[in-house]
Length: 251
Length: 257
Image (tube, rainbow over all chains, first blue to last red):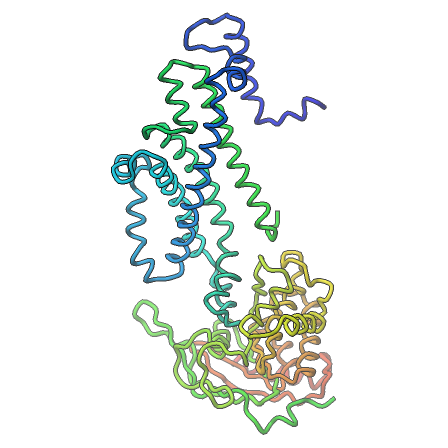
């Protein structure tokens, strides 16, 4: 029964870890870039520079939270406005859909020129990476509201505010959460990417850049591992939000 | 049992005068309703029956105020309709309960536009739940209800704002025949208790004759009222009697023409 408790998805990482232990930790394969697994896993606890991963992860998480909040709020607000109002759609949608075509990291030269290379520019970058998936899904959600429900709202004469609260916002929630789930991923990539690409500062990205510069493969691998765990954690958060916020869903 | 029509014939609740409706499809005018004229008395129960495609649902949507592009006049107490109003309610063929609101809040939608105190609001919803027999299901989600219960909740949502005129668009069409017969009795009970005016659209001749004081028969392409048949049978009505069947045959005869 103990074996049955290991989820099927855990077998592959466990197998890779075992192969790593077998080939490298035993000394069967020796190369300056091949670091034993036990050293990598010990680095965040015993190594002076390795310990910095904790504060790096913390500042990345703060950054992703802040950038995500700004980007997601704007995405929902603009998405609802564009979805509900024809004039707003005509005025804003072409611009937004045009800007969406700009590859995420192509924003960096422009943004650093405007906002320097400190924290501000990273937050702006993360906000942008969050905005588009949330905006697109919200807009689709509003358009997808069944005409049948809109007629009910008309028959019971809901005013604009109650229409938003009773009909629009709950109706689009599943679509918005799909956007949020996507956006958490792009925001996390945007966070580490911007830390890596833009100048100085703390964070997992900066940690990775420093570790590479000093040829510490164990620290690079720890950085990658923490980034993967962070991304996985964020998508779990999104799934929990789904279950919590949509109790009316039949499952 | 006497019918409320007896003391209410004097006043007209709803007048349709020369009502017409045309859809424009690919540059062609397609008339769906033509010269509809009906006077519906306060407290009357009118059935509108017709084959599918005769425009009966369209007509009801016009009366409800969901569509204001039509010809002719629709008057409520002598005033032309302008959009949905608090004195009218519409029950759709499908219940259209919001899946994200429980039964109480779905019924409460009918009160959201009114400025009621919390206590008044709760009392009215409780009263409706009782009327439609859903008291134990106040907190249930729509997906937990059977088809008949969901439709009852939808009727409660329509009645909670205390409309004078209840419009129903094939409200029992999706129900099984046992539930349907039961819901028809319930509807008649509510109609008697509330003394409201009811206009029900149906393609079921049995239902139309069982419920209505009068049955308006519509014919399609374009939709017109072909004839209006009085159902002067005492209530409660039996669905099996000779008189009932004679009226049914008359309606069916009109439909076949």
